[in-house]
Structures are given as C-alpha cells and as structure tokens.
Length: 240
Image (cartoon, rainbow, N blue to C red):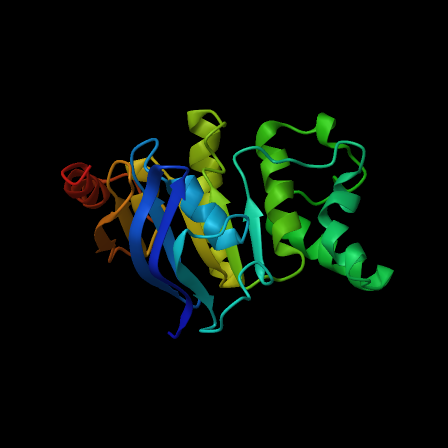
C-alpha cells in the first residue's frame, strides 16, 4: 500500500504551551490507524490538524504527497453526531452531495446505499430527535461517507455511548471499513477499543504529545475480547 497521508515533524503550540512535539508518521491507503494516549496529550489537536481545522506551528502534513491539499478529501466524525436537527435523515446524509450539485437520482441512490450499510434503511424521513444516540452516530458516519472521501477522521465517536452500544458500534465500524476500504484515523483513549479496531496504533506521551511507539496489531478481523486481544492490551498498558 502507498502512503496516503504523511506528517513530518508536526508540532503545535497554544501561546507558550506546547501541545504536540515533532510528530512523524504516515498512513497508507486503506489503513485503519488509532491515535491512543492519555487525556490532554494532544490527540484531538492532532486530528484537527489532519482535518485542516488547525495549522501546525511547525512541520507539515502531506496528502497524496502534495502540499496544501489537507482538508479537501477528508471528512470528520466527532464524539457528538452534530446532525442538522431541522433536516430529515435523508437531507442530513445527502447534504454534502447537494452542496456539490449532484443530481437528485444520484443523491437518492447514495443515501439508500449508505443507510443500508449502516443498518438504518427506512428511516429517511425521520428527524434526528426521533433517533437514539447510536442511530444518530450511524447517520453521521453515513453523511461523512456520502461524498466518498479518501480519509475518514473519527474523534472518539463512540465516547458518549453506553458500553453495550459502544461495542456494537465498534463491530459495525469494522464491517463498514471492510466494505468501503476507507482509510480511517481514529482517536481514542480506550486501549481495548484501539486493539479491536486498528491495523496500527500510534501511542502518544502525556503533553506535550510525542510519539512514544507505533504498534502494529497483527490480529485477524473480526476481533473478539479474548486472550489474544488482552495480550495486546497488556502490552499497550505498559506504554501509557
């Protein structure tokens, strides 16, 4: 696999406070990478830099090995779904497609495809308030996937869900990734979650966040909460 995105000596300061220091790693096309670290280590700041919402104080982020294109082929899913409450599920999912001028038939077909993928066929006319938290997050994922971005950034997207629903969403995300082949960069502070999901885990130190180690998880999907997974969890616990 070729590198899709690369960070070179990325650092970030808020005023005089350093949040990230000399971050160097790359993500291959189709890879699932988790950013793991303690609270306050700069995980969300790093994701915002990858999304193009923040500029690094120093260093650079390259997409497809070209400068100044970060943000143009990337979509973000946050901890809260941030759906438009005045729009139906159909209108939420197709929002990006409407903005770029796709024909109605194209939009309708894409919405049907994605709602089927996330297990929500038949809810097109519902409003977000009529959906559970897990359903809203699935709609947010469908909306992010609708324009077919190269990279999906996810900032603790299941953090607000209860434990049972979180497990279900983790399993569904593995299936979505298998079907779409998307490159996913996923921020979490949950060690078990990172092992269940990732091909590689970028472990950050406490602030200012530096890369302590990059761990490749060589377990087949789907992964169960078994001895093999918890062996990896134990190894990562020693790093944090």
